[in-house]
Structure formats: C-alpha cells, structure tokens
Image (cartoon, rainbow, N blue to C red; front, side, top):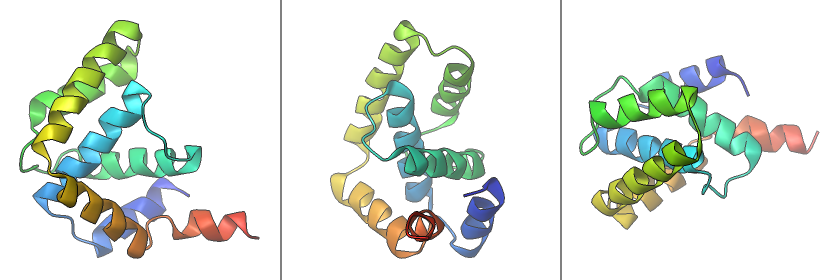
Length: 121
C-alpha cells in the first residue's frame, strides 16, 4: 500500500465532511494507542488522514488537526492522554451510525483491497 494508492482512491471516491471527521477521529484513535485495527490498516488510515486533513470537516476543525500534527512530533504519555480525551469527545460528536457507515464504505469501496489481496499472494 502506497501513499499514491490512497491518493488515487481518495480522488475517485469523493468524501463528505462527515467522512473527513471520521478519518480524523480514527487518526486520533491511532495516536492514543486504542485503535484495534491491524498494523497495515492503521497505516492506510494514516495515509487517508494525510489526504483529507486539509479538507473541511463537519464537526472537527483546525484545532484537532493542529493537535494531531503536534502529536506526530511529540507523542509522549501526556500527549497520548490529551489525544485520548479529544478522541473521546470527537467520538461523542460523531454519531455511531455515521462512523459505522464510513468504515463500511471504505471497506466496500476497496480502500483496503490491495492489503487483502497481497496477504493471499
């Protein structure tokens, strides 16, 4: 899986502002260490976040993106705890059905397909 593959996927699968919020929330979960996705899926989701971080979200804004950027440079225990608090707040703002629909859409629309086909080669 390459950054170009994810960029191509984003270009052919327009994402809504709600989708940007979902990708942002997943990035927070990756950073706070609570994400249960497989390692390669976390990588893809991080690449997806990089592709959409400059797009407007519906609920999450520049403050969260600045926090994520800062966390990438200084991810100590205090930052991880702060990220966790912000992630929990973000997840309370994004409805469960919206997040579930987002996760189903990215799987159904093939964002992870190269990962799964490579595993079986």
